[in-house]
Image (cartoon, rainbow, N blue to C red; front, side):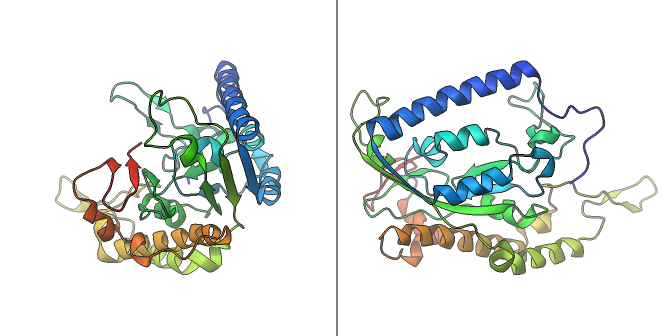
Length: 310
């Protein structure tokens, strides 16, 4: 990733940081009061995960990002995935694909610096729900994983540290079938949050990353060629996250994303199995399986699960 321009600040403004800390502290307090004050919450593997966060306290010495991946069983999963002490240790989330010199827009007219424009935000912690939807299945089955998580693993340089997680019980706190008032959490439920062991990324994803780099190198420098005035082709180097047509839609690129997504999903399933759940139906990990749901996007599905697009 390119170095940020010298005029970029190392961190957001003081008012922004105070506001961010205030919001995250209030969110953490509410989350903790529900998780540990009004429900029976069990957290497994937290000590090992907190050691990882301790190693990352110094933003100047971070050399890799941190990626946590879990199932998405409730609209409340985001708070339960990152317990209050973890929130305060590492409150920042970033846009993983924006180069430090880029900006983003929310409506096409406004403009904000990409979070990774600040040096203090580089190699940050990202939590992702690859299912892309809240999915509440009677047997705690997961949907297929979307390809965004594969891009984070294949394209990031260096590869982030990856920790799989499993969350259950929050589906009863915020059941998609709950009656009014829907915004009120249902208390007194048993919640389990499990941090799995950190994945050996070189062992699990190393071959896929090597194939991706080879595929990218085959595109050469002229990934996005254009015609100069004299008719000769000119070339531009692609920024991080910007892909040529072949890297987006080529058979080998698609195959790599499918295989990478399959492997990260299997890592989450391992954590699921450690909590006593039986092996997942292999067909559940295929997008073709979920096409049987038809055009219905939310609500009660044919397999008895409830889905909400968030």
